Length: 376
Image (cartoon, rainbow, N blue to C red):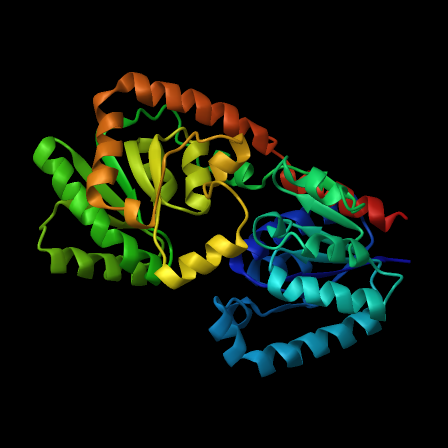
């Protein structure tokens, strides 16, 4: 009798990670049926049983979700009915906590025999620790990307396993052989969303102007995540009337991380990616003042940078809110530009920190955990 897995991912990043896990799982379990909802990469692996819904499901922000509450409620009911009919051995949830945690709770009540695993554990340790005991009631295991996560879940009796971070595999595949960083090239990474770019890139332009007046040989480059964002960035450059001060590319962020001598990077996954490549940088972030105050009340962590959280110390300088301004950022970057010793020392710390991500093979280790539950 075939083993059955129902899987749910709601964003492109989760779709990529889910596809990697499913591909490894298919190699381990020969008679496997897969059903569920995800994106194009998961659908390519799983076949007709998996619907591609991420273009509609990947919405950001409370207001956007509320506007589409009826749509999400209908998909929730459809998928719950589908899982009751499919009767999977394992429900595999990939990231997407706003939907997936509620779905896990409903499935545990409707299909108590189904084992429920969560891949890419929700960051409830940062923003909602009181949810962790509730998660223990409906999850059978959490597969974690960071080594500090399992003890947090294990405290409430929830099985949690560190499988490593799939980012390592993705970044290693894009490593440039024998690349030598250009000590005069400064990378500008303003984020991958329009709102982030609107808040941060004008500050980065002013920072580049200050640095250029200090060191005329410096060059600057910004990689846009899409053609649409590249157009937004070019419009901001035209508005600032800075000519060809900053080179704009569409894509190429991982290449720039390896070629640049230093950088300023918006808080997010890019900071972890840059750390893996050993790029010295400072972290910046700004949000609306009211949003920031609410975040301070909800988020109970001392640091916001993933590298600093992983290291348990301030490896990277964080310039948040009013501190994310041209004078402070240009000062931080000048320290890197003036001191090869400072850059070298930081690279050593970054290498030690990113070594904690678990090495190559995260998807295979996660798939092995899923396969173990299929044999129960």
